[in-house]
Amino acid sequence: MIYKHRQLEYVLKEASGTFPALLLTGPRQSGKTTLLKNLFSDRAKFISLDESDIRLWAHEDPRDFIQTNKPPVIIDEIQYAPDLLTYIKRRIDDDRTPGQWYLTGSSQFALMKNVSESLAGRTAIFHLLPFTHSEIHGRLYSSWDSWFNSIKNNYPDDEDLGTVLRGGSYPELVCNNSINQRIWYDSYIQTYIEKDLSLVYDIGDINIFYKMLTLLALRTGTILNMSSLASDLGVSVPTVKRWISVLESSYVLYLLQPYYSNIGKRLIKSPKVYFLDTGLAVHLTGIRDNEVLLRSPLAGQMFETFVVSEFVKNFYHHGERPSLSFINNKNIWEVDLLIERGTNILPVEIKLSATILHIHLKNFNLLRNVLQGLDDSNYLISNRKEYIYMKGTHICYWGSL
Image 1: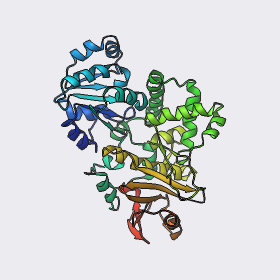
Image 2 (image 1 turned 135 degrees about the vertical axis):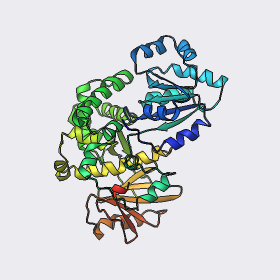
Image 3 (image 1 turned 180 degrees about the horizontal axis):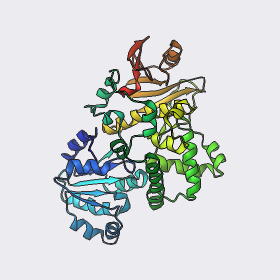
Image 4 (image 1 turned 180 degrees about the vertical axis):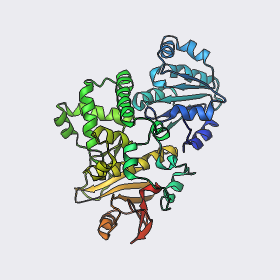
């Protein structure tokens, strides 16, 4: 499989010259192992805890495991043997030479708890999600701001939106056109539930959990209503809340939080829910045709999910935490994204339409009536292929993301 360079390479190289340990987290099959091998295999031995005999060795004799696998070393899927972190901490305390320990993990919540207890101050933590759209096309940028400024450019990529939304962004699907997408996603879901969730979390009834995944796919890009989900599934709200936390911590979902401010009591205070891979979301809905997808009532939600996930991924792949929110005034008007950059706030709207009318810009004016500190310009991501500037708004094509 051809290796495609990742945006995060630059940050990882820099951190490896400063920190004794690097931890790379992200969903299963996002390319964590491939990335670390590509960057550091010339200097570090590789060992994977995904193999049952290796995992058993790490569990039963962690001291011998660490003594045998001396640094520099890449340890894959560290969440399967969290006790190793204590022994790694001791080795780091004895030798703080940068670039000795390279760790990957797929389950953020349990893993981060162990890391914070064992390796606080000793490790640099990064997050690798599936490909960004710009990574797929070989466009890498020195900073998040450089990437954001580039979306005003016109790129000539002749892409079909339905193919992009349904095809998803996992490396194996992007780099290997011969893979049967339906079979791959079915296997991915089964592996995710049976390995990541069953080994790390106690999720209870797997069938109901899978049903919730499907319901969430149908609701991606909407306000999260846990009471409605609980009612549809026949489980308690705390169960739904815990399951969604699991999906969020394993990078299947992203919860976009509402903007909080003293600008009124009419603001929606629940988050919006997004899948971080539209291919997975579309697969769960049962849609198997590009044209059917783009004509379905879900087209707008999937398009919004794609755009929001691109912003989330680009933050993470530049080594930053996403500084994103949205604002909804009791469903009277909404602005899809507010991006905080220092004291500046960039307002972004997302419209599937290729024809942009003045009515599409009205929410920006409503927002500026109630919120201070906004950037001088607005941004609208649409299906219009040519960039234009209209009434203070940069109207950008999704293909430029």
